[in-house]
Length: 108
Image (cartoon, rainbow, N blue to C red; front, side, top):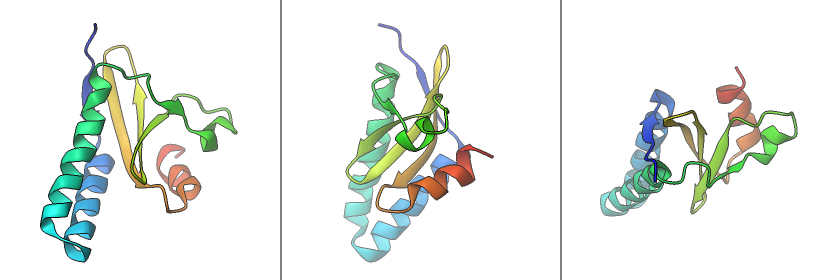
């Protein structure tokens, strides 16, 4: 089975850092460590099955199909795939207004 490289762009790295800080400050460092590791592990699973996610419904409505998502708890991991790489673009809290966040980040 072909393995893809998983690449985190700067915004996705910032998202992971911000999630970590938020959980560490509002809950515990131990919980933040576990969540961070789980989110990264979920992203890295895309190495072997990059098309397992689905096209984002918010973008499908406007005809944009190149971005996909997988979920971990309330978090939505948004990514795209080319011939050999998976690009993780953002890790968003699904409880927030994802439509606005997507417009700001992906449709610039």
